[in-house]
Length: 188
Image 1 (cartoon, rainbow, N blue to C red):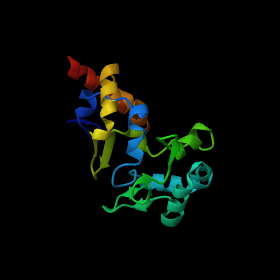
Image 2 (cartoon, rainbow, N blue to C red):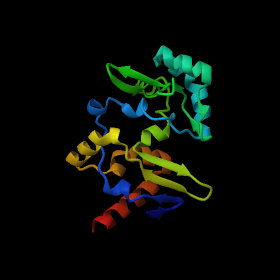
Image 3 (cartoon, helix red, strand yellow):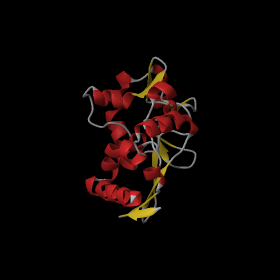
Image 4 (cartoon, rainbow, N blue to C red):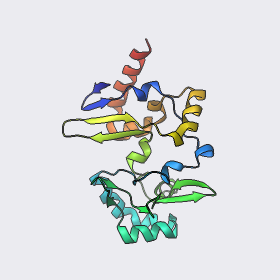
């Protein structure tokens, strides 16, 4: 672990490789697990605002879940999260054949909204846990992502480089530049 500003960062994001391999995993992270995607309070307000524009991209099961539960929920541990369909799929998930995709991101890609998706989804496999004085930045190793780890090793792309855009979105350009310096120093 090392400190960057008000973050404590796991060296695992520098020492492990990762590139999403949707052809292998079929977007399992959007349909497996026991909770929705973590959200910030600000993101809950964004979801409420954009839902009417995102709704046409969603499956009927997702729309039903959102209209029954809301655009976001308080999870079992009290954290803010996206709602689930029958305690499985994220309510915002859509499918291209058998591959899970994000309905929010599809609306973004088509220029309907200007918000890509929750930052926790954008950052994955990195998870950020906010505490009073700092944020912990950790690598979340999940066996459904083994194909992504293999592809990352093959292409020699460390986790932090794979999620560069999301890290910059979350922490800013200066923070990411400092992260790159730490990564270079660790290679020496």
